[in-house]
Amino acid sequence: MQTARIRRRTEDIDELFAPQHTGSAELPDPEPLVATLAGGVLEVMAGVRDVDQLARWLAEEPYQALVLRANLAARARSARSQTAKHPPYRLRRVICAEPADGVIEATAIVETPGRTRAIAMRLEGYDRRWRATSLAIL
Image (cartoon, rainbow, N blue to C red):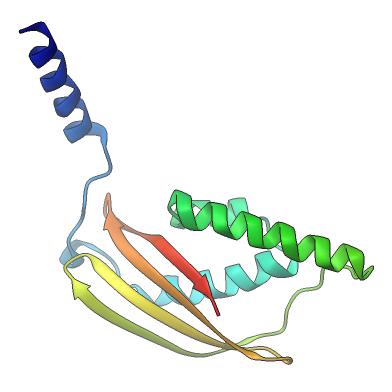
């Protein structure tokens, strides 16, 4: 009896304080966030922006993956004795699809002097704002 009561309290607490899924109607247009995140990711990898500045928009898994990628890029720059420089880039296109309510799958095509990259991300609505739950830099 006691464990059932404790379990119920835990469920109540989770329901009240856990991140709440938000539908698309209550969320802002995702395209500006996709463009901002794409540029921010390039700047993190170039070493001119701290990954913590993007933490607000990233779930734990993409945040940790970006930290790892930024550290690897910093090591590569250090091995080549290069300093961090602001990356020149041009956002070519943002493509968004909505596979479910409160979910956006987006790709930002970004052109840099050396190559053109695609930055793919999945945004989910939680607590009336978008959060990237998946991020891939191609």
